[in-house]
Image (cartoon, rainbow over all chains, first blue to last red; front, side, top):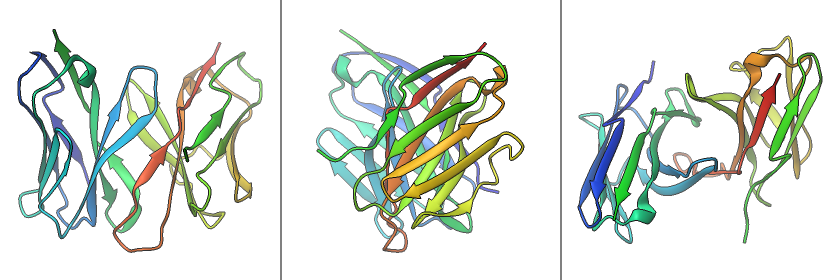
Length: 113
Length: 116
């Protein structure tokens, strides 16, 4: 059974810091991994999707890496800004059904000026 | 600007009442998902449609919940009768399932349901 864990659960940092958010999964036989952002009271916004054949994806100040063999992914946020404050969730496809996503509990990030 | 839309955005109702939530997936997408989010359980998949056919509704309490896709532009999630424990945010997501392993999902803004 696939389980997804995110560490830390919450993070509070001053503006400008570089951040690393961690995601681990128990079943390494995944097709891809997706990172989402959720603002309070809002839906989820897809940030990055990494295919199983890729090792990383970049979008602006965000960089996500994937190490299938160790069951880990990291989301790197460079030069954090207050506007980055949100909950970040990672998700992997359900084992045996690649369109069903299993979500981690998320990391709640607060970036203060 | 293609996006998933959901109505209503907020719903407050009394226990025992019927609740219907609607979702319009992104045009051209062939998969639709219903999720429920609570503080205790996080995000849980309730139902999954591909090409309008229900493929998985194992996460849904069958005695009170039902999900349908009357056409490619509308998905509905119905609760009858509603109970206080159904209070949650219900998200709809859509995706294009044509290439194995490429199944990015796009989420709607959610319906915040409160059952009194």
